[in-house]
Image (tube, one colour):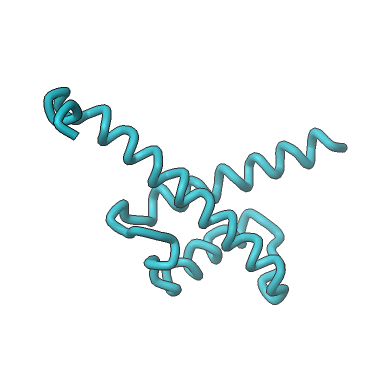
Length: 94
């Protein structure tokens, strides 16, 4: 039973991350900068595959927190890739 729950959690986490990577723009500084309409749209895209109680504010807050965490992970990954692609001379000057 615990393995099934763990697999579902990992799958949901992966779905949230995929939506962040596809729908968000790296120029946004924080999760707060993302338009509420886009946040709702991303949550709505989860509904067909997951049993989400959208009327429950606690559930929606938890989902929003997951999106926020995945957004920060994605931003960090993008920054790391950008730093690796910089010229070595530029990195030495910083």
